[in-house]
Length: 383
Image (cartoon, rainbow, N blue to C red):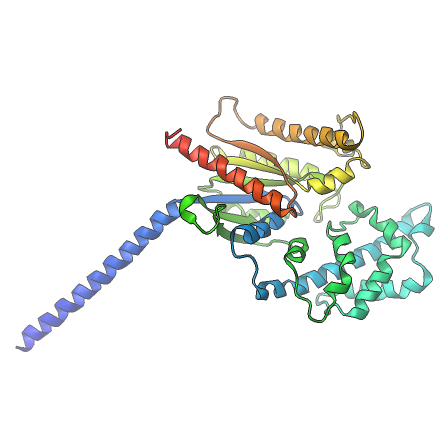
C-alpha cells in the first residue's frame, strides 16, 4: 500500500514539474515571438547633438511621460545647470578681459565682482546647494551685468549651453521652495548621457496592435562613451543619427581644438562604414534648426572647414533656406560616398528637426514610422 502511495505521489510531482516546465517553455516562446516584432532603433550622434532631448520627447509623446517623482528628480540637475552656466560666464569675462584689446567691456561692475566670485566658487563644487531666492537674485544681478551679456554673445567659444537664456529668464520660478520642474524644464535640463538607456514605445500610442513597437536606445555621445555602442549594433532596424547643425562654429566639450561639425561629419562617416549597418536604414535628424536659423545670418557657414566652399546668395529667410540646403547636401554627399549606387536595401531619409519642438518631433517620428513600416511591407513582398 505504501509503495502504491509513494508511486502515486511521485507521479503527481512529475506531472506538476512537467506542467511547470511546459508553462515556462510557452512563456519563453511567447516572449521570443513578441521580441521578434519589436523594432530596434539606435539613437547616435556626437555629444550635445540633442539626442537625449529627442529621447525625453519620445517618453512624453508616446509613453505616460514623467510622474511627479521623476519631475522632482530633475530639481538638482536644473539647479546644477544654473550654477555651472553662471560660473562659465563669470570665468569667461576674466578670460576675455585678459586676452582682448578692449578689456573694459568684459570687466564686471565693482558691486558685482564679489557676487561673481561667490557664484563661481559655488559652481566649482561637486555638490551644489539648493537654489534659494537669495542666490537666484544674485545670479540675476550678475546675468544683467553688461560684461556677462557681452561674454554670453561669445558663448560658442566657452561651451555655454543652449539652455542659458531659458534658465536665466526663469530663475524666480526655479528657486521657489515648492518648485517642481515642468515638462519644458526637463527638456531643457542638461545631463550627459553615460552608458545606455532604452525605452519601448509605439508612435500610434497605447493601441500597440495598430502599429509597430519600437525599442529606442540612447547612448552617450562623448568620445569616451562610444565604446559602449558596439554591442548594440546587431539587429538594428534603423539608426537615428542626430547632427546639431547650429554647432558649425563651436568646439567639443572634451576637445576644445576640435570643431563640433567636423566631429559630427567624421562620426557619421564612421557609422556609415560599419559592416553591421550595411542594410540598416539611416534616419538623419538635422537638429537644432531653431538655433541655426538665428545664427547663420550673423555667423557665416564657411567658418567651418567642411563648409569652406559656401557662398551666401541672399539675406533673411531665403538665405537661411539656402544655408540649410547646403548643409543637407553635404550630408547627402557623405552618405552616397559610403553607399554603392545600386544599393536599394538601405533607406536613407533626412529630417529637419528642433528637439525642443514637441509637435515637430511627433510629426517626424510618425514619418519615420511610416517609412520603416513601408520598408517592412516591401521586404515581405506585400508592396
